[in-house]
Every structure is written in C-alpha cells, then in structure tokens.
Image (cartoon, rainbow over all chains, first blue to last red; front, side, top):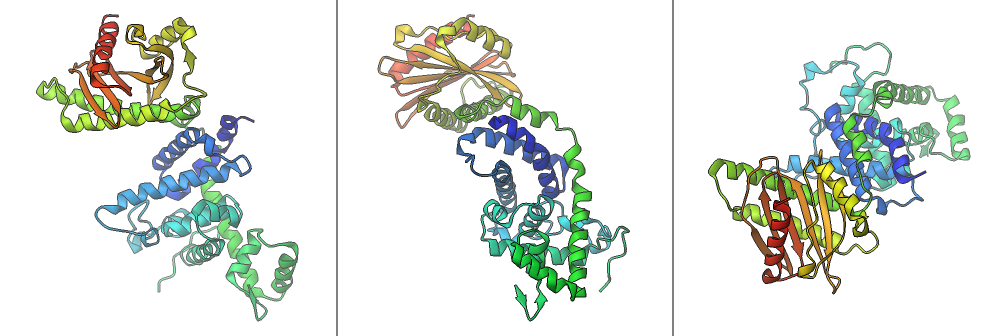
Length: 169
Length: 256
C-alpha cells in the first residue's frame, strides 16, 4: 500500500482524535488538514516499522500543542502542564452551566495533557508505549495522567445512560 | 501495582486497557472476584469508555471534508511541498504588497516586505537547490507539455523564457499548489551546475511593481509583480549577473 493510500485510511481516526481533543469541528478539521499536509511534506521521515497512525497522531498532537502555546503565550511564559483545563478549547464554563452528565463537556474540562492521554488510550485503544512516544513522556507519566483523567471523569461525569444532576458539594 | 491484596487505580486501568501480560491479568482477575469496590471501579472504566465511544465514534462515519481530501490529492511528496509553502509565503506577501500599492500607489516594495520576501525566496532556493534526485517534475525535454500544462493550470499563458544567452538552460518545471491556487516553478542550471529558480504565481490584485533585488549569503533574489502574475528569481550570482537575466525574464514573460 502506498504512503498516500495508507494515509487516507487514517483520516477518519485523525478527525475523531482532533474533534475530541479540541471539542470544535472546524478547529479539528483545520488541525487534521495541517497534519496531513505536514505528513506528506515530511513523508521521508516516516519509519515504516512504526505504526503510521502513531506517527500521524504525533504530528497532529504537536501541531495542536504548539498552536495552543503560541496562542497562550501572549507575553507570559506558560508551561504545558500549567495550561488550565479547558483553556485550549473553550472558556471554562460557569459551574452552574456545566452540562450535566455530558462526557464531551467533561473531556473538555480536562487539562490538555490528561485529555490527550485519555483519548489515545481509551478512544483509540493505543498502547501505553505508543502514547508515551506520541506525547513524549515516560510510560509512568502516561499512567499517572491517565489515572488522574479517569478520576476526574468519575467525579464530573456519571457514565449511566441517564444524565443526572452533578453532586453539589 | 497490587498492595495488600488491593488493586490500585493504575493496575486496574492497565488491566482494562489490555496492558497486562497473561499472568498479571490473571492475578487481577483473581483479586477482582473478592473485591466489589474494584468491580465497581472496573465497571466505571468501561462506562467511561462506552460514553467516549458514543460521543466521538460518529465522527468516523462522517464524510471527509473536501479541503482535507484535496490536501491529500493535491500533494506532491517530498521537498516540493516545502518549496510550495515558501512560494505561498511569497504569494501572500505579494498580495499584501498589491494592497499597499493599491492604497498608496507605491511602485516599490517597502523595506520590511522586501525583507520578508527575500527570506522566503532564499529559503526556498536553499531547499530545492540541494535536490539531486528529483529536481523537477517535468523535464525540459517535454517542454511543450510543461508549458501547456502550467498555462492551463494558472489560467495564464506561461512560458519559461530562453535564458541560454545568459548561460542558463532550463532543467524543467513543476506545478506547485498554493493553497487553492496553482503556481509554476522553473529550474535553470548553468554549465557549472549552479541553479537558478523562477517562480510564477498569480497576482489577483493586478498591480505592478518595480524590480527589487536583494543579496544575502551569496544568494541573489529579484522579484516583481506584473499584471496578472508575480515573479521571483533566486540564484547564487551577483547583482550584475542577475539583472540582465531578470530583464530577459521580464521581457519574455511580459510580452506573451
């Protein structure tokens, strides 16, 4: 299968990842387009021994992070881990406007580094090793971010079929 | 991962994610049988996963948006995309320039725009100039085909000028995709195997400018806007060497 042919087969998954990552369809598709263009431009750097999807996700993820960084910079020095939850997609909603039982909203409210790990592992069913490579951190960090993301979802989102009121503390 | 017979979150997560080997997984399963809390926690993880899939899997079935499709279809693999991007930058600058020209009727580029254009041209030249295996898409031996094709794509008669009098022979050319607009690229080479590039891009503003020449790190550039098209030359040569070439290009292309 040619590079391009295989690339095309990954597009739906790239779009799903980007959508979940950004929470915004237009933004997500821009990101996917940038990712595709970059992948085609840099195709010589692709190692066929590695899963192409992991390589593509690395590109997309880095584009997203660098895009967010340049937007967040604005005279401040902000580390990736300091990016507040929700800051890379939508303004954090007021507590009383939180969509109850809405998984998308809960994902949006996750800090970016936890969100990407959660999506890669749970939605894309990638191995911890691949996720560590994509996000550029050790596996232990992947696991701790994943664990924190899951705790957050457990608090913010009740997975029952019926939405229910969020606990008021 | 397992402490005092209790399964911690990480271990349970790793189990749910299929990360554990057969033995480790069997151990977790044995512990799970007597641990209702862990059973609930595992069920919760599965609910989370199901919810995520419900929320985002529909994206998989969506039609791929046309801009993404064309990003794949229009792409030329390799260095040419980089060149295209450089030319895109030039094109954007040229468009910006054209607006300025329109507004204040300047016939010269401002120094900051010129600096940006020069940097873009020089970078592009550095990229393609080092390409040995695939310098062009259509070689000069298919010249007629190349010109017809590029003219058709740019919607303007395009012709790679004959620069033999100046010691440069056409190597060939290529179509570059500039966002939604096509652009033409020609490569020339002299007897010493030194290369010169000529970019031709559409100029929607239809505004003219004078020639502008810049030299840095041994690469001379010359660029101008002329009616429906914009031009940029780059090569390792002196100002005195490039100037007549630029005029030859201008004469040849402007009068088609």
